Image (tube, rainbow over the protein chains, first blue to last red):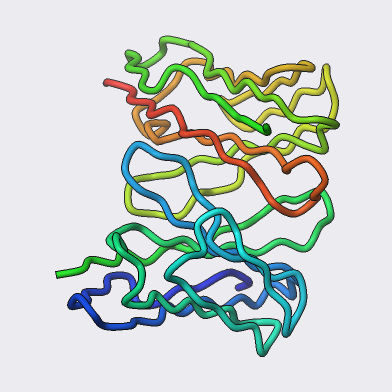
Length: 112
Length: 111
């Protein structure tokens, strides 16, 4: 079955630690995205990548980093510089120029 | 500035009570409007894409419509399993790939 997988589902981090969230897709989509979702707010774009080895900052990139070494994979690192990292993180991908994006199941990150 | 506004923020319906959710947008040169359904603790599930004013799409009890300034998601005779948060999104002006999302409407259908 084609789809987007994210791991882990739940992640706990101590202050001062970097953590990496995994996102993999087997849809053969060129573009991949990372969003952050907080209660009562819409999705906010962190980073996106349209092709391998290229990515752009979204609206809230500070304190985050990404890489795109393979078409299928787009990991997100939440660094210690991110001041309020506790949130629900969503990965998405798209192939069409019309912009339809398909989402993974999400990772809930909690900073202790 | 591109903006997407959804209303109401929350809606409670009795089973079978039809209603509509609204998504208004201010984007130069609309290149599509997308509706998603999101269940608690899960990723959004794609529902519809609308491209031009007057277009309609249907899926089971849901029908999405589009005008030049807004979109409606009509829910006919809803069931409790339709309870979810419904999100709409549009591509940013000048980009076919970046989406701006509304804050969503949380729908609760009571049995």
